[in-house]
Image (cartoon, rainbow, N blue to C red; front, side, top):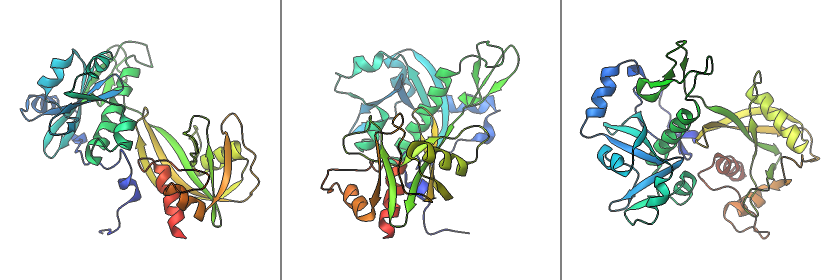
Length: 310
């Protein structure tokens, strides 16, 4: 059955990609050899955690394999899939190379958040860059077997690591995070942490713990951070968040209490905001210069959806 209304998740930053990952071919070594040998193959390049773009008619994040290897010794090369029938890889080079390229006009070395908020990368490229960053970050942090401690080998194009000693296979992980807009009639609860930009308020969020449902994670986090008891919880959307590799699960929750008691170790402030407040924060016209996160973040869309309901 077709759906004329696109999913909210698809409209979020790092989520709009259409790469065909060919998951069904991951045990086919000949397939990966053929993809690497394809003369049309391209790759993203990361210096540590930072992507590198090459100046063509505009900054572009895709390099030929030859252009990538000319920058530095390749530390890791992972297969992401195909985009527009072109094999796409992700290449890791030495961390210090990015710094040496910053003063060269033919390259742009910029962190992934800035590429998103400054609209340097297209939505398609941004989603693929997020995938590339998450996968490379996982490999950098999981080079040894958690079962026996032996150094592992990347296999299946980089979609798993295998231990040559005990045979254990390790697969890339994501960390589920509940992010929630808590409402009380025409108001919603937003908070801020000291690290936020001046005047910025956002939805509360927290990691889901072992043995916990998404709904109970929402209730626990809101009670811990703001002292508010939450009743009904509903799902809204998800967003891959490659910092380093989380899945933000957006929810709406109904407040059963209204008196805020913040946990000062988690929040600097928390307030109830009216829909009128939110509309001004979204358009950056609030008299107190209060704002919400940029559109690349799922929090922006949870807040906007609620503001526009009124």
